[in-house]
Length: 42
Length: 567
Image (cartoon, rainbow over all chains, first blue to last red; front, side, top):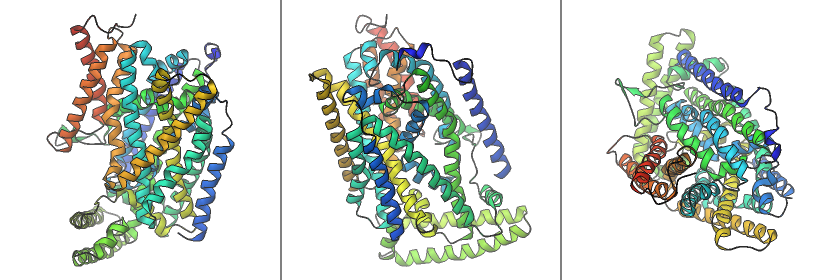
């Protein structure tokens, strides 16, 4: 990996924290959706 | 298999091999051979990570697991996104800054040579054996279902990919995984479509979900609580998935060279992180869909007669054994239950109510009970009584159209090749960098490059050897793939956790802490297998990781002068 790492912009979000929060939100949303799915059909 | 199936299978495999050899042009040094000159974009890293993690067992075992046990296995992956975040924050920047080839190289600088050697050795042992089993597991299933010779199947499953893996290294591995994943996804979607298409005309997709849900197969989220207490022996629930799964995935992505090697090929920290995080986002939905196919197969067999036992080879052995009359009786009972089930389903379709649901559940209990009796006969006949991994392929070979059968069989090979190729590349890189180079110095980059290719070939031969040996033992080893990881991952992860987060602990303390922890892990595993304790194997990862940290502190306190802590 090159020295361009420090200069490379974080895509989409302003920082990597934004990405990490997004991944956590996706996980929580998936768990909630799966729970609702289980409740509806089980 | 029909001629068209063979054409599709051979063409697909030949295409992958040709593409892998075409993509084998790389610089003739360790950077080129093991890390593709650190040039990959995030999406290629993502596909490579996915191709490495999803083996043939994923596509065989998961639908079968959903058929017999429902969808709760998806919870096994809930810890993965959280682990990906931790790897992005801590592991990726450090590995990138140090320009390492293997994860264990980092440990020598942080601790000492013996800690690096121990951790690398544990990785080689675990990955070497599990790769051999990863060759054997799909081979025994294909051999049983299709009547292929197991030794030739092992050879094709593990041997052909050696051609492009040896010649092209990490670059060939990554580019072939890209193509493999796309073919696998396309094939699984087509299979899913055909399962729904094969249901009776009056049964749509949501009807299928409703039926399977009423029969307990859509148990996606489970708490693990039984009789008011948390069941530590329960394998898959939301708690073990998030906590135990987190430690497992953290070790897998942070300390297993077969995955570390994938994101080290990225051209920057950003590309590495994006590949890992995107995998954290897509893996769970992908696994959900694979399990859903198993549920749809289950629904299909509500309306169609299911085999008494999905492993046809064992069934044929039973039919020609002293138990054939007992088997015949059980098969007649299954036929009678099927007639009652079809009637109950018609009644349910006309007037869905709790009484109809109760009757369907009762019939399912009867079916499960008859299957248990058949399994008992298989055991008495000295066969393997676990047919979970045969369910999906049996459905494929019995019901899917000609051509698609060949494609689905090809997918089993491709999934296998993707993970095995990455494993061979990582085994070779660790052998060369963590062992060979430290004791035998090659003079030129060309010599190192040639040595790397020889080691890749040697590990390929070793893993095929393990597969051949496993063929003599039996296919209960299929489950060993999952368990082998948990036996070693906790200890290896613990060493890395100490390395990153507990600077006061030095090399000697963590070295002995790792050995003690590994012994404890094996004891706990044996105790659980012998039913002295109830402990799901996922928990071994967390226990291993935490024990190394705790013993590390204790030993550092007892041995303060030996093994300097980090400055």
